[in-house]
Length: 308
Image 1 (tube, one colour):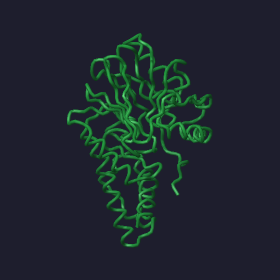
Image 2 (spheres, helix red, strand yellow):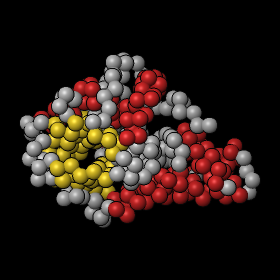
Image 3 (tube, one colour):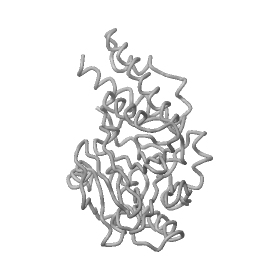
Image 4 (cartoon, one colour):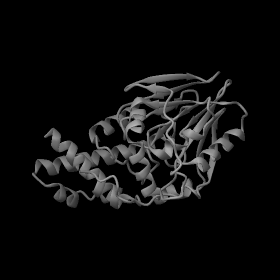
C-alpha cells in the first residue's frame, strides 16, 4: 500500500513570489520567480499555471494553494488586461492547483474534470488535512471552502472554449496522475499546460501517487505525439520547457516498468525489487529518495503484479 501521508519537503505558500512570461499575443505562463534556478537542481518548486486573453475575457489555468497566491495571479492578469476572468480551469483536484477557486469572482465559470469534482465532493476534509500536514499550518489552507466545477469534462473529453478570437482546447488524454487530469492547448501559439503529470524538466520525475504506471506511460506518450516539435510546455511546477523535455519522464517510467517487470518475472519481492532498482541515472531529483523507492517502484510493482 502506498502511504500518501509521508512528509516530503515542500515549498512555502506564504513566501512564494510569482512572475509571468508572455509566450504569444494574449498567452502567458506564470511560475515562481525562483523556478529557473531550482529546476536544474531538482528542488521542489511551487505551482505554475497561466492565463489566456481573448476578445471577450480571460481564462486562468490553475488557481493556486491559497488566497495570497491566487491574488498574485490576478495581479499578473490585471497588469496586462482589464477584461473579466470568464473561465478558470483546474488541471487536477490537487489543492495547490484548485483551492484558489473560492476567491475568484462569482461570475467566473470553473472548469474541472468530472472525476476532480467527484474527488472534492467526497474527500475534501481529508484532502485539506493532508495538505496542511505537508504544507504547514497557517498557509491559508484552513479557511478553504470547496468551489467545484460549473462545466465538467467527461473521461476522454475534448472541450473547445471560445474566448473571442482565440479557441482554447481542454483535453483529457487519459490517466496521467489523478484520473482527472486536464491538459490545456492553445493551438495558435503551440503552448500546452500539463499540470502535475509533467512537474518540470529534468531531473524532476513523475509521481505515481495513485499508481496506474502503464496508463500514465501511455498518456504521456500520447501527449508527446500530439505536440508539434516547436511546442512549448508549461509544466505543473516549473518554468516553460520544450516538447523534448517530456521524453525524460517517459524514459524514466519505461525504465521503472522494465526493471520492475524483470524483478517480478524472477520472483523477487517488493523489498528486493526496491533494493535492486536504484536507477542512479535518474537520481538527480532532490525528492528521488522518497519518490522512487517509496512511491513509484511500489506502485509499479503493485500494478504489474496484478497483470502477471
